[in-house]
Amino acid sequence: MEIAALYLPQFYPIPENDDWWGKGFTEWTNVVKARPLFRGHFQPNSPGELGYYSLLDEEVREAQASLAREFGVTSFCYWHYWFGNGKVLLEKPLSEVIESRRPDFPFFVGWANHSWSGIWVGAPGRTLMEQTYPGAEDDRDHFNSLLPAFRDTRYVTLQGKPVFVIFNPTGLPDPKHFVETWQELAREAGLPGLYIIAWVEGKRGFVQYRDHSSDGFDAGLYVSIAVKRNLVNVTRDILRKQLTWFGPGRYKSSMELPRPFRKLKGVVHPSVQPNWDNTPRSSRGGFVITDASPQIFELQLTEALTMEFNNDVDQQLVVIKSWNEWAEGNYLEPDHRWGRGWLEAVQRARRKCGF
Image 1 (cartoon, rainbow, N blue to C red):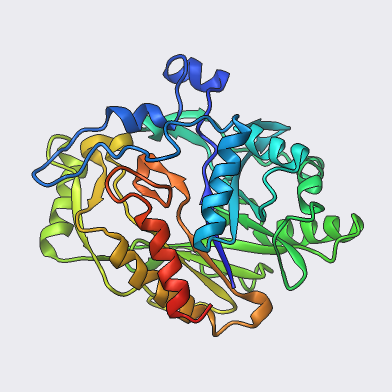
Image 2 (cartoon, helix red, strand yellow; image 1 turned 60 degrees about the vertical axis):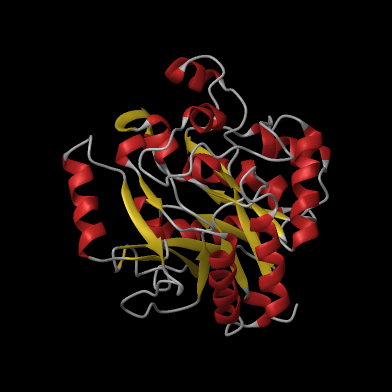
């Protein structure tokens, strides 16, 4: 069973962020300035033993891998930003992992194929970097840029094929053609193909993309926050979007993982989120899970692992969102509130499932 954690690389300065948000901007910038916005709201969340790290520090990356390995996270899924025509951002951590061959820890890549907006600081309407799809030559250049990763002996495979996640499959001009093209490029490069996963996001009971199987994807990754919805919190959610002073939205955790309201065809892998609180980015425009805890996360992860046993043994994957998404409140890394509690929950869930 592969238990992967999504891995955000936004923890070192880049020139673009310096220009947009001020010199030295990283994910920590928003985390540090966060404040409670209602009674009982726990902010700011602050890191524990790893501290306010830079991902350009090789020893930090080693320490992250050591913690993940100790508590049963089997791999990292590094977010990868390719905007077309060779434009990449936040590429250094993954590049250094490949070049240095450290840490010796399994990984795979997720393409975050969306335009960059001002969401990092609560301004989602501001476009900073547009996601483009220039065509066949760019597809080949993009594939070749990742080929050293696909060939790395640490790279995670399912059914013997390197795993590749696409965050926004509906943003592709022709998803089916893209999948066919990349599978052909993989075979030309001597690989057995790729195991391409479509991010299938569920919002308010609706599945955003139902065609992953017919479009040739090997699987879907179903991503939705497990919360209880009632008239009070739905009304509050509506008001916060209309009255900026009203928010943030507030929800309680559901003990059961959300299911697509209509059964999806093909293989679907589940995901689990330890917590959600994106007010460090969106302030009163965000929303918060008010009762998140390692104990609830453990129950949800146990359910996801149990569900995944229904897939073939060489096709079992559960994704945790995320390893270090601190400004969204979903992370496994130690903090000052729970210590290693989120990681210990992973360990207990694995033991409950017998591995």
